[in-house]
Image 1 (spheres, one colour):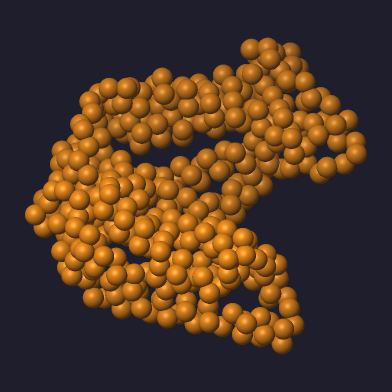
Image 2 (cartoon, helix red, strand yellow):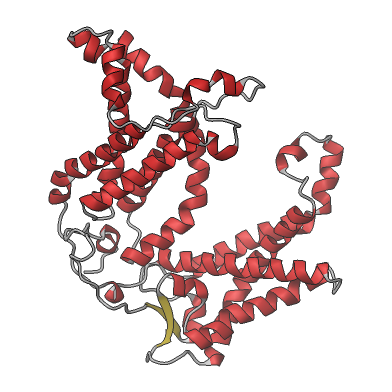
Length: 420
């Protein structure tokens, strides 16, 4: 137990740091993760989401293992870390370290069990082992890709250490060791090899082409969120430019937002058959008869009904963004420390924004209740406009090309939705 505690103790702080950072990163990366999964598979199954979140937590933990604990910046920092200032560029130096730490004794305890150099080498071997498993089980790539990924990740870690956290510190506080590059890469390859039996146990896919699968509600909502975020960003930038040039103030919020929504949800779909968000999710808008760009009047009806729901939300998000940009000293953490009387007037000064947010939440909830459930169901704005969403057809690519393995995981969400 003493040996185990001695080995585990230095890694408790990095593990706690990773656990603290993971929830924030998971929230920030959820939307791009959903976009990647929907583009790649057409569905976002729970298994894939859990595997990606697990890999994200592992990646954050691996990074923290290489940089945490952070040293204190002092005047004598470079003198304190002088032994690790010069990189170790001699391959095989770890063997010499093992012999040195064993005090030249040929004994199992000295050479292996109680040898810190062996412990460090084993931990470096295990560090990127999950990366190799991920490359084979999730990305379906070969050993060469696993080796490149392992070497690239290890090189990033070593450069982070060798540059003093990319210049944050005036000198390195951990050693750049070429042996770590070799051992980490070997660990990624070992993980790829160890994942072989698990890949062979995965069931075969159902073989349904992506363009023949019904578009799930989650895929449509992700496309809508991308469209709303994009249109809100464009609106905020346009307002800042106009206000900076002296063309007006907050009274421009409604007309600029309306103009952006018309451009985003009417003009662009008329030209390209889809909004930018739907194009990103490999979706397009078609009539019941299909073929050709959607008629302008149908797009206008669809945008008007959709705007009744989304316009207040977009306006609220833009207003919040402008408030934060104009007055960056209004974070809730600082506001919570104010005098209650001053905090009351702060909230009262932005009461319309808070009320609009509550109204929008209730309005969107009521709209969702009007929509039928199911992957092939039409929303009210789709039924009224006569436009529906369908997946884009993409040219087929060889399954066994580019180092990609033949076995692919089935899309469980599609099967679970009841569509056969």
